[in-house]
Image (spheres, rainbow over the protein chains, first blue to last red):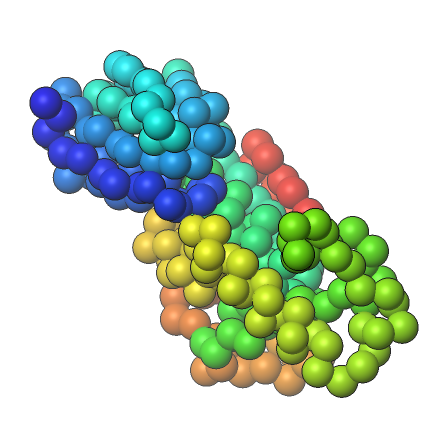
Length: 75
Length: 162
């Protein structure tokens, strides 16, 4: 179970990333944020976001057009 | 790898609804990824700092602007883009599409840029040229000229011109 969940379904680039950045601010260091999105571009974008910011992308999966990302807050 | 030591600047020269997207999308995203960002608004980009945004698109001279319509994509012949009201109609269509597809509005992105402490510089010369006052602009912006931008660009890793 993630510490927080962000529903970014229906939002297009760059909103899932911008809202995730905001949501991460409320997550404690070492805590996790789950993001649900329907933007297929979010797959590559969350990988890039995590590589660049130093946060850890623990999991990403897709189920029926909904992408799920689990990010561990490091930075 | 942390991006904290990298920074970005963008010169914003165009103020139509469609051209307003690249600088604001890139600025907010870069800021979200930890980069200090500066936007320098000059010429037709300057009105993007006005409190009251009245953004429009135009199909004139833009054969690539095709809207999804009737299951395909439709553009406008150049001659019809001169008819009064066509730009307004295209703008309404574009804004409807933007909403329907979950794309942020420029107002929303600009607000997020302000929140993310993106530095926004209004070009003084353009303000004089087109007769804008600082009171017409949103709060929290800086005013400067070419030297202000060059100093910023010299210290930035990524410098873009839109």
